[in-house]
Length: 200
Image (tube, rainbow, N blue to C red; front, side, top):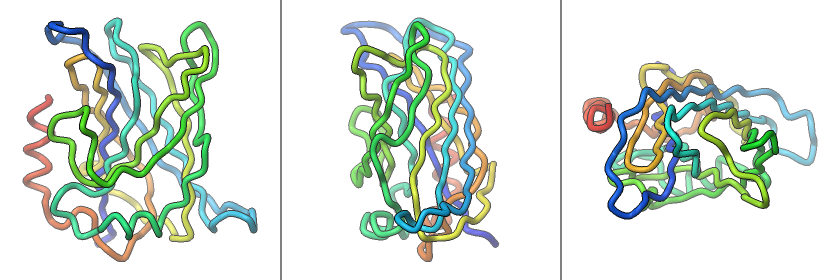
């Protein structure tokens, strides 16, 4: 069985005080592709994450999280740190008014405190808002590197979530990820399904 990785992308905006959740028909989807880097100064493989979102309301993207290892997984933070090379800026998306938004990336070992219940190891993509901000719709193309060759990931396991104001929107993520010797999913499929069910 190929390695399978749970990947959770979260798009968050700080809520207005006292604001109630708004129902929306939001969408978010993405893909991770891998290709040889061809650059002797970089690791052997370049991984490109492409994410498209539409919040369907006035609340726009705040940041993206790529959840690599949920709580209870067998990968430690040092495993992920040694496997991934993160260069900044990581990539860009279109922004409001036709401008371009650049993103920095950070490995977070303790989850995302701005999102209740989002724990474990994750890769955070943070917009660099210098005169340009992400909009309610957009496409981000983001890159990280690894010397570890890609393996296919299960589309039923990978997913994305769009968080805006108090609401979450899940979508599908497909593609490839470095084939780590540790197993980030650790047979926690039932628990993962329960977490996703909380936000549908």
